Amino acid sequence: MDVCFTVDYEPDCPPYMTDTFRGVEEATTPLLAMLREEGVPATFFSTGVVAERYPAAIDAIVHDGHELGCHGHTHRKFPDLPPGEAREEIETSAAVLRRHAPVTSFRAPNLVFPDAYLRFLADAGFTLDSSQARYKATWWRRDRHATPPLRRIPASATSSVLRLPRPLRETYLAALGGRNTPVVLFVHPWEFVDLRHTDLRLDCRFATGETAFRRVRAVLRFLTRRGARFVTMRDLAAAQPA
Ligand SMILES: [Zn+2]
Image (cartoon, rainbow, N blue to C red; front, side, top):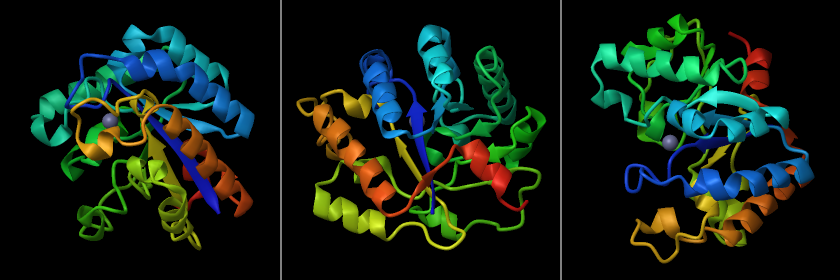
């Protein structure tokens, strides 16, 4: 079973907080340490703005051998942007991120991306889109023929699932994946900051901070015991038929 562990590397809990970057500032070093200890290569989908503000953090990610991907520039939702702005959002973030590493994988903020804009990704040199989500109704209604030359690999589960107590979490995880269906998980840096006493929505704040570190590490070990092979999104795309 192929498993991609991905990080949407962004401001704190958009659109609720957006002006702070505590997750990037406080969680990057321990998150990289955990991935190193568990031997897990990850894909970090960063916004361009985060890369502009924290270039050393991006270099640390690349230095550890993780894939750098693109999560838009400003974390605005693409359905809200007219075509010209959508194209600019993609081109600007790609240019900023590619100062650090080759970047060919993309995930839209909030996992929503209009099909009509897929050509902007292809034009900007992206070969993989992970903006869809298997757990959303839109995945089941999608047009299955619409998208060459991009590979499209959806996320399997929303991030808060990884922070659930063990029985719920492992029951959910055990049901993911299957023959020719990779498991794509994602987390956010701000989940590793203690947000329990903020007034954020419950799914954004429960079990954040140290508990999130403990539970996400347990997820990686649970999947390893079940025979997971951890790969980056780029490697997964390369291995999949077009
Ligand atoms: Zn995001």
